Picture 1: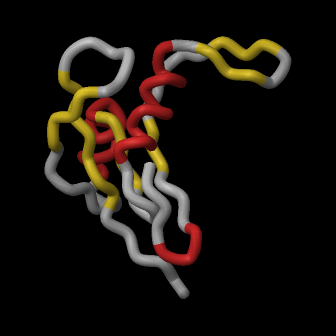
Picture 2: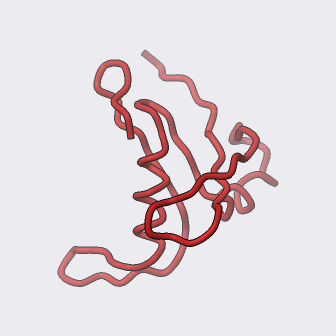
Picture 3: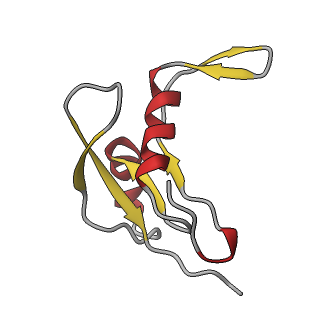
Length: 89
């Protein structure tokens, strides 16, 4: 990811099973979340299409339209959605 204003870090999120070995997490979706985070600009939150599909029906989290991205080490295109949020300060 690219640094943002006031040092805000980009974030990426997905949901799946992971392997926990001594506090270190492993698995395809750990890599997916990291790669999604790398696509985000500083202060931006991107989520996978799986997270989008889980939370969008609730209607309380503003999500942008998806866009396809190629993620290093993962085959094909993956859709990411921006979470529209505003900082409180």
